[in-house]
Image 1 (cartoon, rainbow, N blue to C red):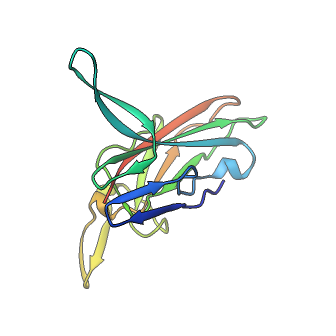
Image 2: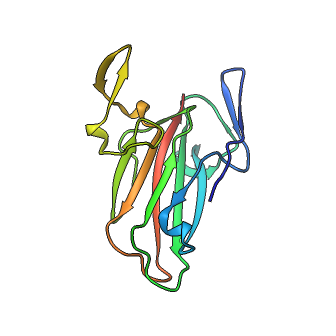
Length: 169
């Protein structure tokens, strides 16, 4: 399932994210008509309740300003007639966003990152980038893609959820 980026940077300070948030979510089993994949993009909103206590809740993304966190939640369900094996969910990180360290979540999965637009994946601590001919350890802001590899079959009708947070640069 492909989603195309529709967004604009306005005056270098506000990023407007339209209804179809930009990313490509890919799943091997989905290509074989086993998975139904849905992505929800939200941001954190802090309010103060009647008792004066701050509350944080997730709300649909509308306008995002630099420094705000954007939360991607990808749910998937096996709609096939047999268990799905080799389930891999991949998601690029928009160039206007930086992955927030330690926020990738996915029960029953191995989480890997890419710094080369998805050509290769590894644990984030094993990645390196080259700048001006000098290699250095990759940091979260260098990550271009995230991949979740399920460690077991996904039974018929079963579903899963993976999530990550990124910050608007």
